[in-house]
Length: 412
Image (cartoon, rainbow, N blue to C red):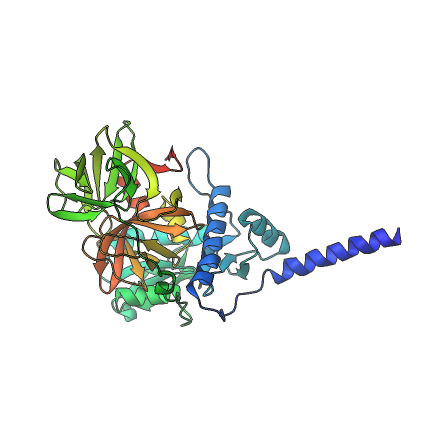
């Protein structure tokens, strides 16, 4: 009996040791090799997707975060930081079980993500028409809503005097780059990605698919002499097969070509603004959909998507990837979302390995959740002010209700 009790105590102590050490805050990685970083990065994003899936309403597809959750951030080594209002072992154990990862640490903060998002939405009407405020954004690491003023001396005004006033933080507006820096790195500790070129040691395969009527993500698409990149594929609510790509330089009624083969007609231009830059190509019956990326020799598919502002802002600062026609290699940048006076939502890529260029417009933008699957978040628009710009899937789906082609099935 004593031997059994001893074994049980050993198991309990072993579990406690594993459980507590797994929540230590990651320190700066000694090995900055891109492949090692990417492995942690993919594990973290897979954990985030599992968390989203766990709290996603099966009927509406909306993610309903619990009140103890305050947002995600990736550490400099690619590990996952989860901000919580309750750092009890019970909550840590629950999140770890949902995320199924050991590469996680927790930081306790005051406000839940639901509270921050409500505060963020509450003053959007004021910001949109304001002459004093340039932009607002959610700063996950500092657990607050940053409010950027043209003149910081005007910050103590009625705009911040409301129910959520304690979580607002006034900052001077300097530039869009300054907003990104203070949103992602409020303590000045820049989390940088190791040089991506270290992982690009082989030539990229041709963009030509097996058969020209098989449509792949990221292929070469154009109307007349205007070239871009194939965005993503889907199904309209009326049952038409569609392709979604950039909106600028497109014209309704034009024939759309994929690798010089006519595959459909431009039937709708949703917009050409910073907030929404997308068009809809209704595909011919001969066009066969696939959710495989066209530039890879191995099967890499879009297995999930983030289609709401609510979910996207909870991971402000995560690293996204894209492959457009002007680049022979995959490129990356940190996602940064803000709400700008006179414009609405604005989407940028900060710390880009290379800025999007002519021909990259429309390319799918994604998080990597494993070496063979991606999570779609939008399409590339271009660049502005030294940063890349993109159009979110949330904005596109708000403007045009449709299903995205994922995992050989249609999902709303």
